[in-house]
Image 1 (spheres, rainbow, N blue to C red):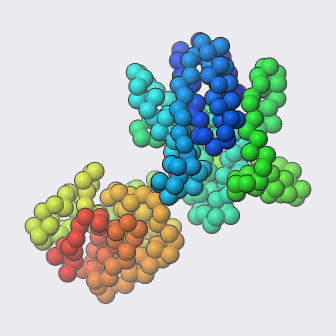
Image 2: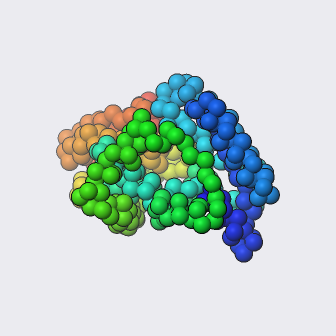
Image 3: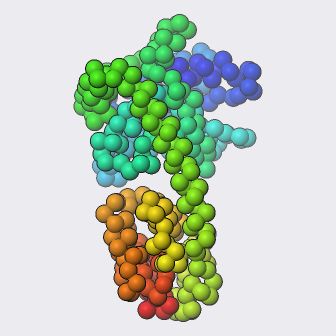
Length: 327
């Protein structure tokens, strides 16, 4: 409600066209229908008819093997991207996470054992399936949003499940953060500050990763003198890339933080973008450090890293044979 109201006020000055979207997750019988009707009513009153989507997120979660929260997020972005794709011109998806959401996210990641990149929390801007997603309220606290709603005579409909410790995030919001506030009354701002610092550090480290990654690639004939045995393998980069080959010695010489990011960067290029554990990265470190070869480490979904003959080769599941240069 706050974000919609703010965007409406800015629309004339910034030549914005606001397209409200509502998703009924069917998680709360009757209340979900009430929320949908209310969102549609407010949108019509503002002269901006609302696109509503009804998705049974429980069934969706069962089908996809996800939690209801994960399915709900997928349902939301499926809807956002669908509407964005139907609109002509420059389209930006705006969502309403706030400073308290940021603090909860960072704390949740710490509890789950995140790496330093995870401390960056929620990004102000990112891309979802080709469309930019922005979070204009990310520096605004929930208390400030509630004050704004009162001052502007807005009346948000509240989800009663937000007041129940039935999800991990709810427990963080209702139990853990209040307890931490007895130690540091500014815990939300402290966690947000940590996120901003981690964001800056992450940006620098990935920029340096990209530079060093480019400098240690082994392309063309040097990558695999025997690629004729695997004609389906494409070139060293691009959407059809089957493998990435790096100089093992140069990779081994990198500081651990950059070396692991380079490993992740190589896998990202051939399609593995998530679920790489610290255990797998440790195993990769071990074979990269050794000159004896060949050695292989299996990664999620059939991806693998093989080290041999001075090369570290990152392979997709579709590449069934080890290139002859690594035999």
